[in-house]
View 1 (cartoon, one colour):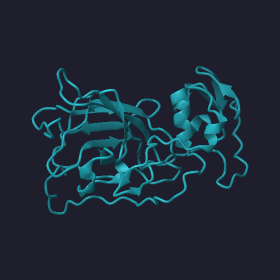
View 2 (cartoon, rainbow, N blue to C red; view 1 turned 45 degrees about the vertical axis):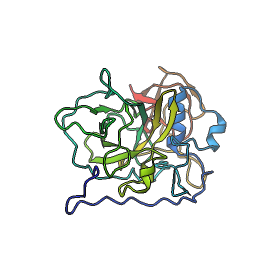
View 3 (cartoon, rainbow, N blue to C red; view 1 turned 120 degrees about the vertical axis):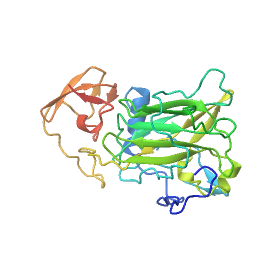
View 4 (tube, helix red, strand yellow; view 1 turned 90 degrees about the vertical axis):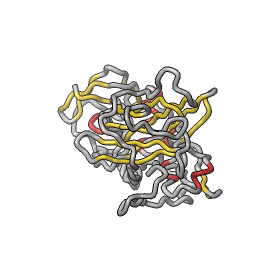
Length: 296
């Protein structure tokens, strides 16, 4: 909650501990390569295939100890940890991507990222409801200032324009969010800022929920990727041991082919249209990557 003693029976939801010493030189996840293709809208360079490129490239620290970026979303990795709602959530917030109003004081902040499922595939149409304190640490409980919801786009991306929230008594800086894929349960959690002194004293603070934040002139830019507990079929692709791939079930799509936006292929007797220019890779079959292909 926001600086108040939790109500009886209300306790923080523990998450799964990540091994901070885990190696980072492993094969990049399906999410990593797909994000690069979405962002660049070009063929993926071969060098990317051996170098992880997570959204949070800065290593977060708490008490001087190194922590792995979270969530990394390797296939089968843990979902984004939940946290309590707190006392100030209000339903029926307006649909908008900017929480700013004319003359809004505070340091401008842009938060962007993607929403993925358990197979590291982007999820379209996810409802994201954000709420936070103003520059003075106060919540608007009568109206909808610094409250709003939006939906992820076809690439699973979102972008929120707001301000850096003020400090609420007893809490570190944070932004509340609810995330819900169509027809799925709601994830309620909070996002945190690195380098905040109160991170070490806030009992709810979870370093796995740290955003990557950087200066942008007089403003701030933050990045965070949500991983929902949503089962996905990643489709045929490289085996975990590096063995042969599952052959395609017929059609004109081929791994290794260069596709441009608007190109049409068939796969498994279904026609698809290309949404993003890319070089096809095993595991990127049209049914597996809705960010690159749409059923025609």
